[in-house]
Amino acid sequence: MKWFLIILIFVTSINTIITRHDISEEKFFVNPQDFPNVIQLNLRDASGIVQMEGTFIEKDWIVTAAHGLNSVEENQTIRIFDSIYILKKIVVHPTWEGFEDDIALIQLDREISKINPTPLYKKLDELNKEITIVGRGWSGTGITGLKNNDQKLRRATNRIDSTSTH
Image (cartoon, helix red, strand yellow):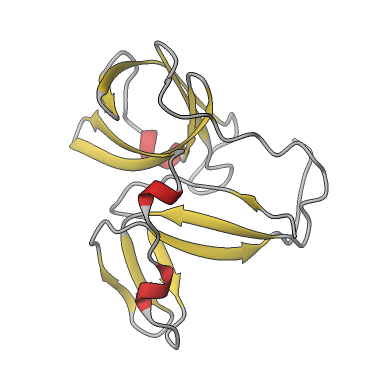
């Protein structure tokens, strides 16, 4: 069975993975070593530190959520693994507003060599496929609502119910 992984990055104050109330919370926890391409980003903006996740997709590119980069500026340093990189370029989707088209790219000043990038999904058959989303931040159930922000890496699944070609 073929499935693909989409990893989205969220600002921790907004990030939420809502889980089923009838399944133990521990079943949603994942080991970060199982997702080496999910990179925790600690970026600076006007209000302090923005904690996000990113997915390593090319030798020097990371895909993330645009809403987390709202006031993050280029040319700042960031630690990834044991190395310091500079944010060379930030590209947000041209029609991003709120959570619509909420995607952005970060280009680093050089390649990350410790891991291989996640291959981009280039097929056009994703409609009705189940995806796995991995992230940190707020969690809870449909009954409890937001419960805690323990920064544990969790997974959730969803099904693609529509697609577009832009």
